[in-house]
Amino acid sequence: MRPHRKALRTTAVGAISAALVAAGTLTTAPAAHAAPPSVGFVDIAGDGGTTLKANVVTPSGADGPRRHPLIVLPTSWATPQIEYLAQAQRLADSGYVVVTYNVRGFWQSGGHIEVAGPPDIADASRVIDWALAHTPADPGKVGMAGVSYGAGISLLTAAHDERVKAVAALSGWADLIDSIYSGRTQHAQAAALLQGAGGVTGRPSAELQEVLRHFFASDLDKEDEMLAWGKKRSPASYVDRINDHGTAVMLANAWGDTVFPPNQYADFYEKLTGPKRLQLRPGDHATAEATGLLGLPNDVWTDTGRWFDHHLKGEDNGVDREQPVRLRSRSGGGYEGYPDWKSVAATERKIALGGTTTIAANVNSGADGGIVLLSSVLDQIARLPPVASIPLLPRRWAAVWQSGKYPTAQRVRGTARLHTTLTPTKESGTLVAYLYDVGPLGLGKLVSNAPYTFHGRTPGKPFGVDLELFSTAYDVPAGHRLALVVDTVDPLYIEHNPSGARLTFSSPANDPSYVSIPLREQ
Image (cartoon, rainbow, N blue to C red; front, side, top):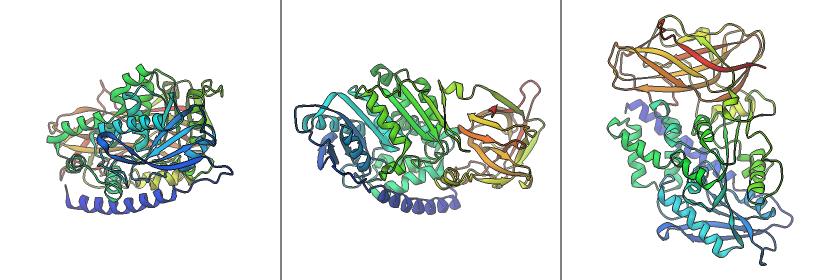
């Protein structure tokens, strides 16, 4: 690890940890209720007898023989057990027994942070056991939901416990490796957020500390072990089990999620065969659900309630007749419905990346993906994504290709894909691709980006590169153009460019280079 990276990461950890703890505190205020349901604080014995601190919320008057559907809510990473209290009370008002619990390793719960490992999955099943034994919960109507960490644990539990009939996974992950190691590149700021917050509010296991140490040190000798560790904790590894169980799965995420980008959720959604729903909207990690945790009106939580009402209560509320893929553009407007993910990007157009372009590595050209959480939140609230002056980007460190001006407004929906031929001067290297919306004055607004790292290549020998940029929904105004920019340094990621490295991009006649963009007229 280079010293300047370590210093930057340490600073980022401190700042992010403080922000996350503050955010966790803010999300603990419950909504007011005229006739609140019964709320109790209990200890539940998890796997191996580990104490899990929990809240139990039951409907008012639920002391008779009637059974109620059960919803279990594991907490998010680094948040206390009362995180979901406002939503738990709303769900109880609707007739659910709700158990929220602090996952092991955090706050007052026992054990160590296992990152949705086997003990966490076993804990969730023990919580279900406890609820069925101690509350008027219906064993045939069990659901799970959660934000972020709670979303991943909910999906993994559904794969291992067939009692879970419905899941709402909000701002979660399906593929842990594709989330923080996509393009074989460490997502440094995202991982630092998890590491820092976990260290402040919990007790990381020895295994987690070792994995993070190898991750940040770019230890290729341990790469296979890290991949296996991540695969075990990825719901995508168990999609066949979820399909066999027939679990009804709702997935919700934000376009700008800098911890769990939307691509891996969309890929997972396509592999599900049971009842399913995919919702994507502007924002960053867990920002779309945040107001609901405060007890304020929130469409994500409203749809979560509708999902459970239909699949656990059997209510005919129309959720099964709506288009299952629902998107909101970062540029504004209401939800758009699609029958499946493939239909989102039904029309693709290519921008040719002609000629031969060489750039030097190790210098940030001025194009970058922003700052974890902050940049996408600004985009969500004020539609202010990261920007760069495309004409002023130094061509020594940035390769730039542009489309012609579009005479009419265009809609980018889905996943842009880069295909090019790369010739390096070193055996390892990193590049980051950016797609910009460029206005008349040359100011580019970031539409999407993604990193790509290679190792073990022969210097001077060309090879093909195929890279998916992070999925998005963005409207390009008439008179604007799109630009693809490629450089080698971005604060979001750890780069692997040796000193003095250069990258050459070419477009052979028999294998032309291009960026394919899911684009259609508005």
